[in-house]
Length: 179
Ligand SMILES: [Zn+2]
Image (cartoon, rainbow, N blue to C red; front, side, top):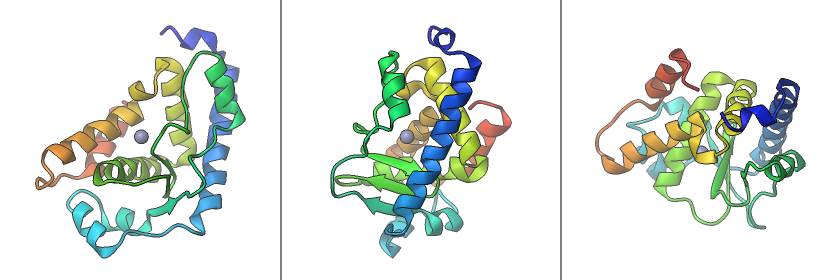
């Protein structure tokens, strides 16, 4: 609870609004030149995701370096909460995964979990839960939406031949109000 007190509800709502609008802008910016999975990649993830998610999620390899942090993120960093898009290997904006460098199956799986979260919650609610999680815990790795993606990614890596439904897992946490 250390960090909640540093932000008023008004400030938190302003950051959530900025996050939601940033997500939508980035999505629209990169969607045009992004591509879907190849048939081979599709097969790898089919036991875990619906066809709808696998067909509609697009990938864009950014050639000119990682994403730059938007101003509101720099501001949050200055207030002592360290979150940097420049350090992440990939970022999912609704149905578009933007990455620089190489994407392995582990990261692809992780980002697909985020795509499912977006699909179920919509990008405004995703922004709400993500930003509140960040400001509440003060750490990227403790944001419940990230914990969920890391847990499912690890389950996949441990047993890639054992199918489970990511959508059911995400829905369960939504129903239990865990995000
Ligand atoms: Zn993530």
